[in-house]
Length: 529
Image (cartoon, rainbow, N blue to C red; front, side, top):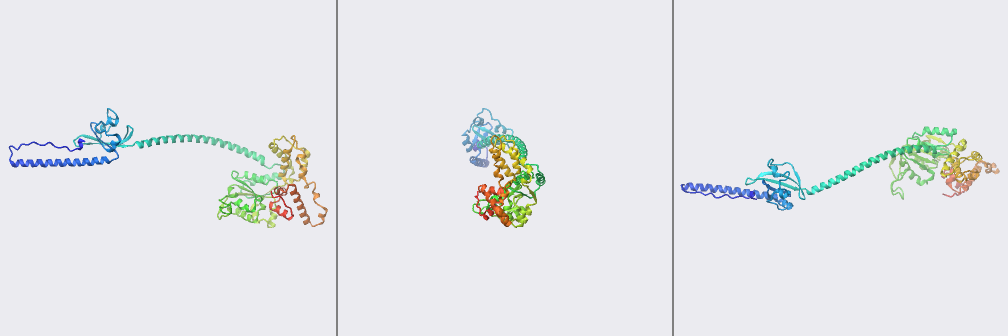
């Protein structure tokens, strides 16, 4: 590093001839002072150079000092560790393996611009570097360029990995976008198909589930349903068992503004009293043994939709009070909870019992009765619209011949006449069961009286009414006679239907609670199936 070392000055030769002793001593003293100043300046330069070199050596960046003839004059420790000791070699040969200066050569650029405010990047061997430079004049007046380099190989590797990752992400995103576009096309196509199928299903459901018949009472019933279906008013459907109360509730829901929301059907007589409240209103965790978490009841599940409460006349006074709160306030409280939960549910209730009489006898709350009976729809029994029996027979034959793969088109007139004479205590449900059994058992696609087993169904209700009344019954109080007849009818029904309470209560139009009370009163014990 010749430019970083202090150089000595050559001694000056002088003659003392022709000078006076005083003059010679003065000149000598001046020379000595000048020499001392120069020595001090050299020492200061040496000190500054040592400090600068010491600073360069501890820097993590690579430092190069390159002469104007492209020879590397100095390298710090970091530069030597990266590229080896290449001092004294041409920079373009040692670092670029070129015979000529490299593109963007700092030495070349320094001839026109001593300072550089931009960073350059290049790859030297396997090392990626970014560098800057500054030109300055050395101690001996030589032009030097200091190049500061930083190893960015790791960053370049990360950038390459990020670039690959970005490219992969772009590819995946493009694939996803294309898949989403395709999915959207499929969704739109499926949506169109769903709408078509929904219209077909609505049409089919209407054909299958609409009440069959053209009697005056049925036409009046259809007109009433048409007027009340789209309102949110509470409806009470009354009528004997088997008249189609659930069917009417379903038609009302499908024609209402809530048709796309939930429609829940709940038989109040089919659930034990102890479970009825939790089933309808839900419960909180810990409300009772086994309540390991919160559960929504039927009313919450049916929120914004419709709930159909069948056999509403069989609920207890406690449940009557709870249901009244729902109808009055539009809110429920879960079992084991204190917080009221707001709900928006249309209630359609149904019963085969006389609620008006139950109100007078204080077995049913008057205020709840009025809340339920905002709109009353009474379904006439089949015996009061006999003109609908033949259309119903035709409807059920078509329905079950398809289900059982039979080719039955009609019933003989003699059988139809017998069906028309029957009072049908089980109403439309009983007629449907008779036709279903007949179609299933028919041989050679012909229904006979044998397949109908009609004598068993007619029993004593029509042709043998007098057989129930004995002479002695006409000689005792009417109350006792009625009780005796009721007991005999119950016993006959229990025997015929093998003690199945579900069938007996349905046929006789009794609620489950009432049925068991009467059985206990008359000493009859049914099978609890």
